[in-house]
Image 1: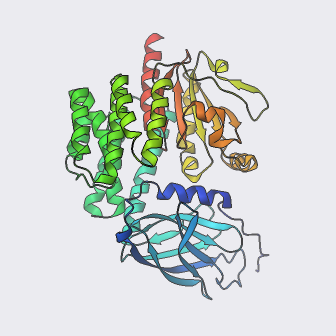
Image 2: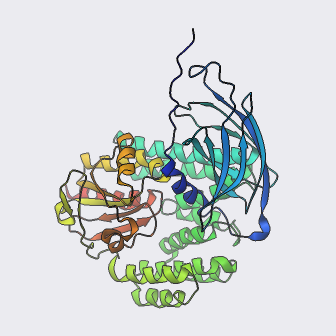
Image 3: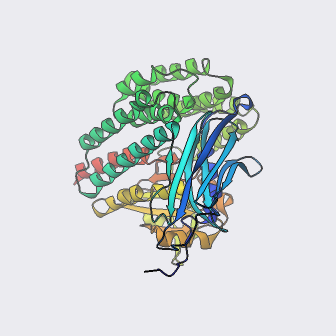
Length: 459
């Protein structure tokens, strides 16, 4: 029996495309004009017979995009012919992760992460509407990336289960961390020299840090100073070293790597000295290094200026800066309203990166059923209607406010928000416990676990 054609709804709003394109390019590798890579993409796309049994699969447009300082560039493009097949070659500025977008009409039907590596041949398949499924992207490099993503998703699910069923404890969490960290580390054996394996090494060490510092440092010692994630790796190793051997040894490690890494990573490693001095309460030393960095050109001078503000206003134990705004219910919001509770203050934009964390974030906020924890979430997306539309699909627990002034808002400036999402834990007395910039909730979980333990001990 023939089915009446239905409207094919896009899976992703167009406004999210640019946010995701920016996110996927961050930290995927070093800029190197001499390392352009060429890959081949082909595949088959189709419309479900339930939508239109006579559709021939032609007219799907496939794009691979690249975020630049001036906008979005198209690296490769193909359009399906009858039978739904397409093929094209693309050249990217470097090996990395780029958005692959499928259109049929004005709005994108799908957007996925695509690893582009020199000589890789990628096959893409999908039947629309996807209805929650991902496109099937097959290649050696993309197989490794899928394994990385699956390991991380499995870890998020295990954490949510621990928090949701009341079995969360340092022991159960450590077990879950160990299992995932080992799985991530073995990607280097299963998919040697791939982006997934390289990032898996870094993710493994970052996950182990604070849970098994000895193993984190042992694995760090196996990696070279030219590792693409060396700045993040030095950061994790510095913290592990501080816990095992003290702050002097940690500072010495950072100084040593500042002399070993490539020139383009040197300022990034030296920025870790600022943070190391912060952690050891050596405020004057931190400010001295930050002032040195302020003499650098470009982004590090700007970073140093913001670090100096952070040192003066946003350190653990300092009073959380006051903010005033109106929530989506029309009620005035200030931090005094949350006194007596631990407050998770978060600044976000409804990007795919933030939405991917939605379930884990809800599990953390759900601890408020057993512990005095509340959340205040502030969207810095200037398009208010876009935020409201997405939050109908991804509802958030806690108090929600939308600040259309974005990164220029008074609240964002008060908390030195440079990366989204940025989260801040504030204790019941209104003092800062910690600030966590970027995706990932590991730091929030670690510090919150300490607060939960202290609360239980008082009961």
